Length: 169
Image (cartoon, rainbow, N blue to C red):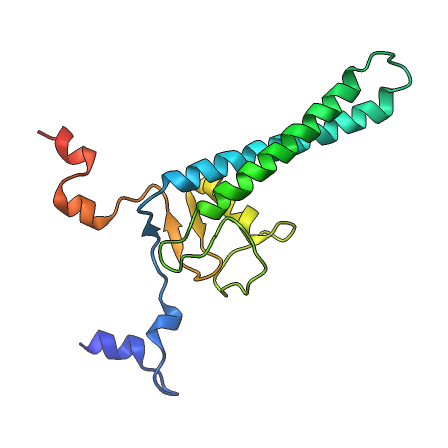
């Protein structure tokens, strides 16, 4: 009891424990939607890089090469970039935060939460996609809650439906 008073009361007055606590990552009940949206976003980024490379090669070598292979590469790159943009847009739009029902993988210009993370040259949506790719975690830009896609919900662990419980016997 004494430790509680020491940690939550200061000389100047009462401190808010919510300001100083660090929240753990929450589990995601339907993580497959986020994996599909991440895949299509990475597919779109791949085709953007491919299209930019094809345009640069076309501009450098279009006078030397009489075949139309660079032109076809540019046209195919533009076609697949537009197609993958449309698919990734709708897939990212379907990935909803379970708490606030926002779209954490798609920035729509709404006001973001203070605790949301953003890599400066990118927007919050692409930052969440990159975070999912490298850490399997992301922060919702609208409510600020951190999610771990690999974490199993505690209710599944209590019910015994988690696969590791069946392997122990």
